[in-house]
Amino acid sequence: MSLASVSDHDASSPRNLRGRYAICGVGETSYRRGSQESTRSLATWAVSNAMRDAGMTAGDIDGMLSYSGNDSTFAPFVAGDLGIRLNFYMDVHGGGSSTEALVGIAMGVIEAGMCRTVAIYRAMNGYSAVRIGGTGARSAVPIVGDQIHHRAYGWQSAGQMFAPTFLRHMYDYGTTPEQVAAVKVAHSKHASNNPKAYYRRRYTVEDVVSSRMICTPLHLLDCCVETDNATCIIVTSVERARDCPSPPAVILAVVGRCCKPRIDMHYQHGPISTVAGRYARELLWPNAGVGPEDIDITGSYDAFTFTTMLQLEDYGFCRKGEGGHYVSDGTIELGGRRPNNTSGGHLCEGYTHGMNMVIENTRQLRGDVDDSCPVGPDGRRQHTHDHGEGGCRQVHGAELTANLGWAMPGTGSAMVMAKDIR
Amino acid sequence: MPIQGDYMGMTLTIEDLDRENREFFRYCAARDFRLQRGTASGLLRYPPTTACPWTGERESEWVPVDAAGTVHSYVQVHHPIQPAFRDTVPYMIILADLDTQKGAPTEHEALRVAGNLVTADGAFAPPDMIARVGIGTRVRMVFVDVTDEFALPQWTIDEGAEQPERPWRYPEE
Image 1: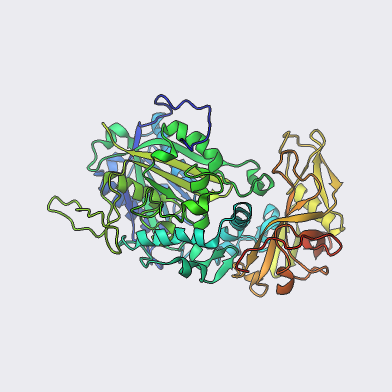
Image 2: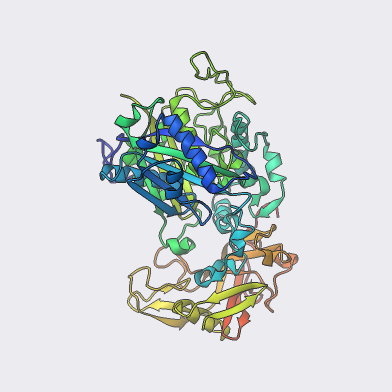
């Protein structure tokens, strides 16, 4: 039985650029606290790594996109530093719903003939400069006009702003703190097999629910890590991507910043325990031509344990209200039926406003995640598929992935990618 | 001149051109809770906006609204993010469904008005008062002055109302 929602979209034939574009290169900096580098320097580092991964030089890139919230360096500086002459660029305001949305923009501008290949990056000192948790610079921003309706009440940080949704889900469906803590448990297991993850320690449910309370229902370990880093993905046509050293991650569908009604104040329009994925799925699955039951790996935004649970539920990976069970029955762990955030995600690997989960799924589809498995004489990792601590995190036979981006309960983005089948 | 005031060490500003918020907070200063009503839709909206979310109509009138409601969800903050709240934790942020227009124009819609849980005098609620409040608690509005022409709406327990036997609270607290 398909759990995807009923929709009037035609899923029977290729449409909306399905299968026409791909991610051909990915790269990142290290994930650190205290980078000692500017966001401009971090961005050039990540873009360089992605270009090298794609086997591209400056002349092969002619489009650039970035996203930020007054905390980064704009594309023209990064392109200039790397000797890239741009036919198109745009710097977008925003955080967690941006990666997939910007992939869609890249596909559109290439399709329109505005450029051929687009590098998308996010560069941030989310720990040592503009802290993502909302302390420091973010709290110092003057409180003017519409912001009075929340910030004057001490209702400002992401955790504080999302908490009414999380709490109401517990009330409406009986979701328990222990069920949701299983998200941290799973992602920390994955991170223990990721040499570049900021936190590689494995945690238990008890560790999570006994950590100190930040704001109900979020314990410290329900919250993601703040780190300094940059990430980059390169989007081009599937034909050009096939000339690159690694197999393309073929894009089947994208949804960008899909919103609940009354997005200015989404709590006015309930149910508030339902998030934007409930609307985004009606675009995503028909356009992709597959359903949630077909997906091998998910990358569900984990700013908090709860955001992963809510999105997996509202995109249809389980029935409405059963998200707590879905994330705690082993399904989302490596070795389970559909692992989520196999790099450790924002809870453990590092915080990049969504892009590191897209990088991870690209590598999974290539069959070449950067874990601790030995490298063979051909330069490729010999994956053991033993997911024990410090071991392998490659998912055997991964062919379809879904990334679910999150800005807030009322706004989400998504992307389905596939292993290339010529 | 912008309306500007110091509140808990935070500077709150309402610009001259922000007519909607000026009106809203000025009525609050007069202890008169009003919301905009679209003349075409007849529907109230919160927070203040420049048009009716159901018709797009830019005209509206400010009408008095009974400021009583029920806690729809809440946040109990233990770790302060903003420096102004450092000495206030734990504190509670309430989203209350007003009785007025609840379930309209569709089933899950309501005028969900934000505020902190405060005492009847407008002071931040002490922990034993916070412990009595959860989803389902009946609350009524009180106002806390920022300047002569600017007050914040806040929520307190409606001691005169019939209360649920046990409002729903987060299980660990």
